[in-house]
Image (tube, rainbow, N blue to C red; front, side):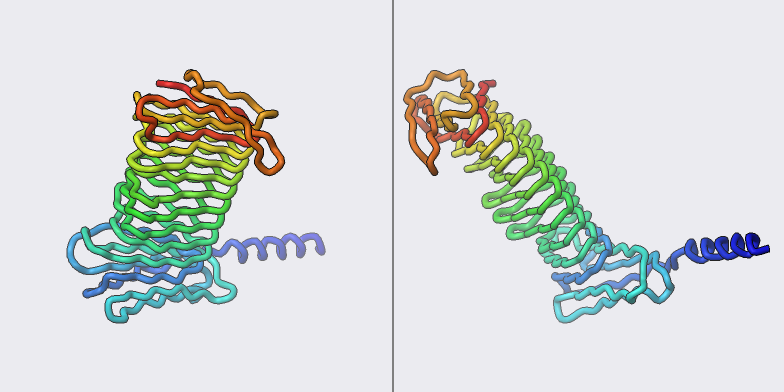
Length: 324
């Protein structure tokens, strides 16, 4: 009899713990005369879309438990819309926000959230900060001066036009760019993730502290830098560099493959006691110098006018240069 009572009790607990979350109907707000949205979130995901008309529309869907675990605050103050997530201490579940902004507008979207993702395909100026969410942008323009920061999320951009002075960073996530057109002052960095850039153009400044940086078929329209502190850096360019370029790694290998033109200065630098220099060009000059108690070898190749200046360097790895 005691065995039977135990089985019944366990079954009862399982049924309670698996009770379904509360799904609330879609809630929607529309606003006129607004050009700025400020979102203070906790864990809600955010989608930004482009739509017709002049209004900004905000929608939220909830899948939470218990039924009163979440409350959304949405209000307009002049030209600013403020959105806030409120959770009870024992609340759990998921919340999804959708912002529809007028096409071609100058909307500014400011987001601060703990773990929500951002997915956007609408032109806007962003100030986005999250602890662990991902950022995924596609088929859109990021307005000048935007910033995206995440502690452990990924940054993924596909067919995106990026304005001047846009900053993107993640502490431990990866960075993936495809078909990106970048303006001056654009910088993307990760502390411990990898960086992959493909079929992109513009001014590129991509770096990783401890991951690899891989570049394929980039075309540069301004001074650019690809660098890693302890990973390998491999840059394969689709057009001859016409501006200053730096490809560097502190402790990994540095590789550059490009259709070099008739005019350039190529400077290759490595530690004398580490790695090799493999280049198709005969050095115009070579020297050794001391830095921080280490001896470095520097080979320089000058062709034509000597511009642009291209630097390939590593502290303890090897250098490989290939002409396409």
